[in-house]
Each structure stands twice: as C-alpha cells, then as structure tokens.
Image 1: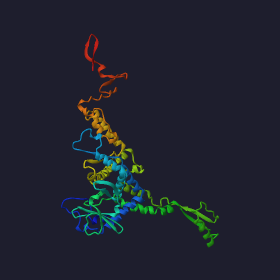
Image 2 (image 1 turned 90 degrees about the vertical axis):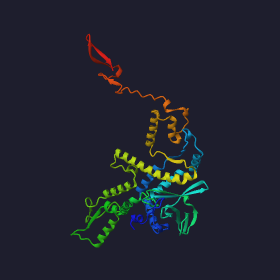
Image 3 (image 1 turned 30 degrees about the horizontal axis):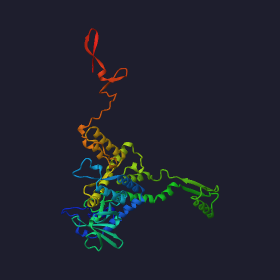
Image 4 (image 1 turned 180 degrees about the vertical axis):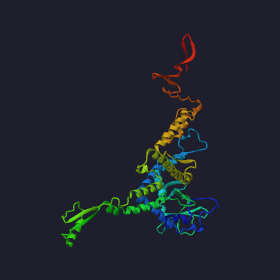
Length: 451
C-alpha cells in the first residue's frame, strides 16, 4: 500500500456536533485499517529514531515550545490588585504541577504530537481531584466515534488485552473509565479525521530516498573513494605463469590492511581515476535535505546549517518559526484547559506560555515601559502585565491614576536640530540665542532679531 492511501480510505477526525456525517456507520467498530494506521505511525517513530535530521528538527521545535509557563485566574470582578495574591485555585494547580513535574509531561506530549500527530493522556483522578497524568503509547490507542462525530470511547489494545474508556458496542473489552478520563492532543487534523497527522508524514518519501542512498554509502565509498588499480603481470618477453598471477592477486587483496605494495619490475600498477566519470551526489543529497527541512518547518540555522544563509534571511526564518511554535503551544493549551484545568480546578484559570525568545520578552517589556512613560497606564497596571516573578506591591497603588501622574521629563538633546542651530565656527547654540539680520538699517547699524 502506498503511503497516502491510508488517509484516503477513512474519514477519521475531531469531535464535532450537528447532524452532518463524518464517517461511515461500519467505522463504529474496530475496523481493519487500524493496522495500516499503526504501521504508518511506526514509520514515523522509526524516522524519528533513525534520521538525525528528523530528530534534531523535532527536538528543537519541542524545546522552543515547552519552556516557561504559569497559570492565571481571570474573573469578571477582577480588581487591579488581585494579581498580587494567588487564589486557592492557583495554589492548588501549581502544587499539582510541581508534584507531577508538569513541564516534563508537556515536553513528552509535544514530542508525541509532532512525531505521531497524536498524544493520548490518561487523567488519573479520585473524585474531583486529579492525581497524575499518564502518557500512553499512541500505537496502542484507537478512537471510536459515531457516524456524526460523537466520541463514544477510547480503546487500548496491548497484545490480547483490551481496555476501553467510554461505551463501545460490538467489542469485548474491559471498561476502566469514561471518555472524559482521556485527553487526546492532536496535531494537524485533516478534514473530519479523528486522528492528527505527524509532521514527519510529508517528508516520508524523501526519507525513503535518503535511506536508500545512505544504505549504499558503504558501497559508494569503497567504489569511489578507493581508486581502481590496473595491474599488469609480466610482458611479452617474460610471460607470467599462473602462480605469478595468483601471488600478485593475493598481495592486492591485502591492500586494505597494508599501505605498501612491493613487487618486481615485471609487475606494472596503474591507478584509474573517476574524475568526470562518476555522478556528483552532492546536489541530489542537498536537495533531499532541503525538502526534509522544509517539511519539518525548522529554520536550517537552528540545525547548524548556515551555508548560503545571510543574517536577514535567518531573521525572517526565526520569526516564522516563532509563529509555528506558538501554534503548537495553542493546541496544547486548548486541550489541557478543556480536559484538565476546567473539570478539576477552575473554569477561570488559563495556561499562559512564556515568551518564545528572550528578545520577544524584551520588546514586550519596552512596550509596557513606554505605556507608563506616556501616562497611558499606571505603574501598578504595568506590574500586573508582567509575568508573576516580577510582581510586587507598589506604594499607594490604588490612588495612582494616569491623569494625576506628573509627566515624565523629556531628555534634552544638545544637538537636536529643531531646538538648536550650528554656527559657522562649528558651535551649536539654541535658536533663541542666535541673532539674525533684518532688512531695516538705522544709522549705519544692522538690526538683529532673536529667533
């Protein structure tokens, strides 16, 4: 079966509402194409583990996406000073985050989303209290839904044992929980499919070609790195016997282990070169790598490839990559809030990601600083816009209003052309001190006026 045929056979996708059909009725059961899907996901996994370029691109994307994060509670009756004191819900979720090492969990979730396009997480809970998040092997999981897109259950098959979360008809499996006990993180969902698509999918054809080329690398190196030897034994006056030929042949076979070949004057050895006769593999290999990098959506500069890339091009690529990272963060944020934060902590708590790059954070800080200096917001409001580690209590914060603040004095620039002028001798003085002549003359004296 060709690579893309598995996605043409079934419409498999996200949870929808309404009366429109998203799959055939026979898809309710554990259909046969599940084996083909798992085979495809195993190809993703093999590509990640066996191609350094793929592993590096995915690891870089995950490391850029999963960095600092914090939780913020937003209320309708929010007061300006509410951010200074953490609510009980915030303290509760921060404790939970520390106990399960949430940063590491999110790192694994993001990696599985990129590799497989899917990550299944079991929410281990007791009543209304969540205890842990267990990340499952996606190749063992299946999503079962109705023809209208309603998720009926999640099925896990490990060997001969089957576990089910939810209610699934026509399948003999042990029920261990409800549909809400599984969080399904998806990446790049196509059409009405119930599964995401790994970022590796588009580069699979190039990876297959690259694998064929690299598998022949040993042969290519032996054939083109080590030159052929044209050896003549004897001449017309001294015809060789078979023992002479066999003796020379045995010595030639040892050339890989020895660096010298000693022979009589009757043996002539000539090296045959390949310059201009063999194909140059640099161009096709570079083309394959470029296609792989483009499909994985990582700037080459982050992979240690800087040939032909100037500073301006690198800046544009890094900005575009920042948007790609934020897109992945947004997918994780939505599912995490809907399946974990809202049911077990509070509907008002949001997962807030930190800045992707340090320079991005510096720009945000400069913008906030400018709003304060322009009397648009108070220092206390500016403090609330910063990450929690910068929060502090400012004096008399409740009484400060933008209209009552004193304007920030502007910086006097002695060379400002709007307020100063340069004289012929090079001195620069303020315009109010410069005298200019006027047309009217009195008693031979030229009258001057100040500007």
